[in-house]
Length: 133
Image (cartoon, rainbow, N blue to C red; front, side):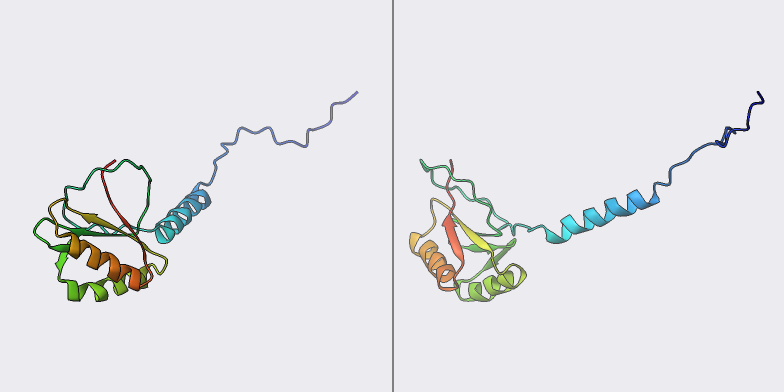
């Protein structure tokens, strides 16, 4: 019996995978996660927070710090109480469902911290007070 020629090409060819489409997919995923992520606006100052017994993990989108010198810090800048509404409105335009966390220093005026909390509540922002665990 005569042997028939094989239909499979048995020549030694180097098979090379084209990685370009996979790289495109990786970059698209990276861009997607960067665009959809929520960044926390840091206050820009460290405060000495009071201790608390409870332990809840929160992920606020904006942090407001009140220092012992009664300065209000948002997004690494100092603001007066009368300027705070405009700053919070601007942050809410970036993230309408944003939650706020107030970091009040132990030596800060409690009235100022409550004024900040009241302002955030008036603007219908969910607000919590930060403490040490």
